[in-house]
Image 1: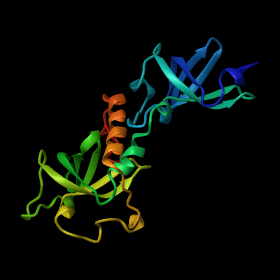
Image 2: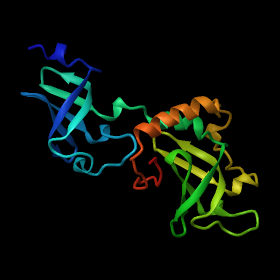
Image 3: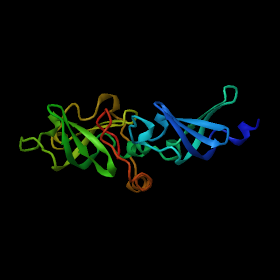
Image 4: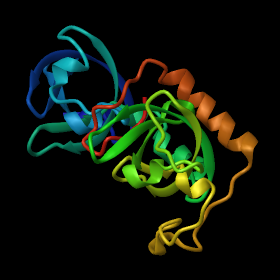
Amino acid sequence: ADIEQKYPVDSKHSATVRNFTNFGVFVELEEGVDGLIHISDLSWSKKIKHPSEFCKVGDKMDVIVLELDRDNRRIALGHKQLETNPWDVFESTFTEGSIHQGTIIEEKKDKAAIVSLPYGVEGICPKKHLKKADGSNANVDEVLDFKVIEFNKEGKKIVVSHTRTFEEGEDDVPAKSAGKKKTTTAGGANKAVKEINDSNEKSTLGDLDALSALK
């Protein structure tokens, strides 16, 4: 009867994991009151194929109420919403045209390489952008400077180029983003990134379809 007072939208609670479905986790807020956390609302950084990869039955989990449908007796909950979306911070750190040191950690045959960037972020470097100043191609384990040529927050994708750090090209900055570079103070960005790292140290990545995300 008083569900709207006890569990208003945006309120935070502790819940117990009860069971899984392919699309989410059912948790118990209190006896007789369960809610669903959709699989997409579990983590900002991990691509989770099944909720059992993220938690176990009986685990305690902090949640936030996203939606309350009293008539249909449904409560939609979120877990990732309790933390800052790291990609909001990375948007101002990895601006298109900015240069960062990175390590090539994997090379996809005839396609691209995966580059480990600062703050646990991975970028993708197309094969043609692996050319070095001496004409040779960069290899796995090399540490080089890389220029951001595309940043896609929605797709959690960062495209970088080593070649563009020493030669110009029309794909230096995509036309759609030209003139829209953002600037930020190093102190502000570093502080925000540190907060994310502190709360998300054990996150992993590398399994995203876009071949990039954050650890």
